[in-house]
Amino acid sequence: KDGSDDHNCGLTNNDPLHQAICRVTAGGITVVAAAANDSHSASRNIPASYNEVIAVSALADTDGKPGGLGGNRCFSWGSYDKDDTFANFSNYGAHVDIMASGKCIWSTLASGAYGYSSGTSMAAPHVAGAAAVLLQRHPTWTPAQVKSALVTTGQRARETRGMSSSTTREGGGFVDLA
Image (cartoon, rainbow, N blue to C red):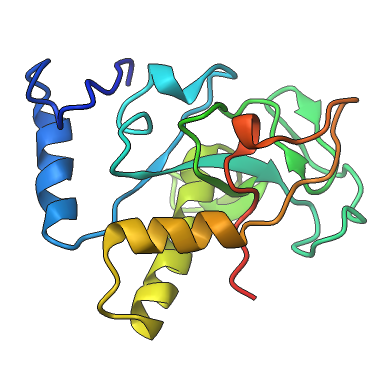
């Protein structure tokens, strides 16, 4: 959804979604949000632009392994992305905290059948699962501690389309609990 962070938990711009997220994170609940799929700055979308959430962009991962050896066998969103590179459709920027596999994910489709789907909404559940693992290991951690642990342990994506990956595009890198 279009919108931005007022940096006051939604009190300045009367944003009920931001107010709700601030209440649940203050209560100890970690919130993960997809950064969206517009190929622009995540600062233009809510809830990804809220500082209280873990905003997730998407990574093209064709083999489920690190190292960039999986090739570019998945066609989605009008192109092939190389393995372990930033997904071409994903939002980016300083509001992105971490990225996860989000291109050509085998999933349940609306029809009830199975097939491939792509998007930051395919990446966000990977990060939510990683956050759950961290909270199982560290049940007293706050949402800020979970976010920090994910961001500081992220792995850099390899170079893509002649540009090196940077923290301004992919956040802390791709999620890595190893």
